[in-house]
Length: 166
Image 1 (cartoon, rainbow, N blue to C red):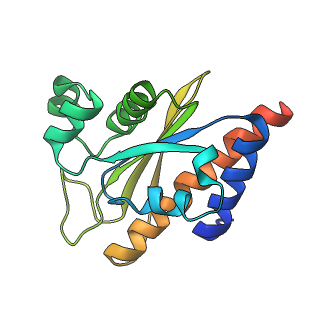
Image 2: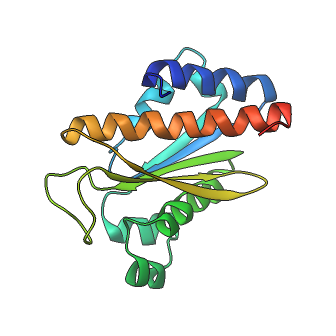
C-alpha cells in the first residue's frame, strides 16, 4: 500500500538518520518534487545531500554520466537509464543512497512508452536496481505518484538492510 509523499519522506529521513546514512536524487519526470519532499522536513540537511533535475537527455549524459550509447540503445525511459542516473548522482555527491526518476508524465507518449510509465532507480552500497510503475492520472498525479513510489522503494530497502529480512 502506497502512503502519501510526506509520510514516506518522514520515514526515509528517520531511517537514514538512525543509521547515519544520506540520500541524493536525480530527477527527470518529477522535476524536483522528490527533492522538495525530502527537504520539507526539519533536520533534512542531516540526511539529504542534494540532487540534480536532469530533464533534458543531454543533462542526463553530461551531468549524471548516463552513457550516450545506453540512451541511444535503450532510451531515457528505461530501467537502465534510471539505474545509471542513480549511480551517477550517488557517485557525484558521495551519498550513501540515491534515488532517480524517469518516465512519461504526459501529455504525449515518449519513446513508445505510454503516459504514466515510470522507472525509479535506487543505488546503494550493496546494489543498484530499478522498478517500473504504471501510474494513472494527469501530469501532476503521475509526478506525485512517482515520488511516492521512489520514497517507498527506499523505505522498503532500508528496512530490509536494518532487519536483514526481505
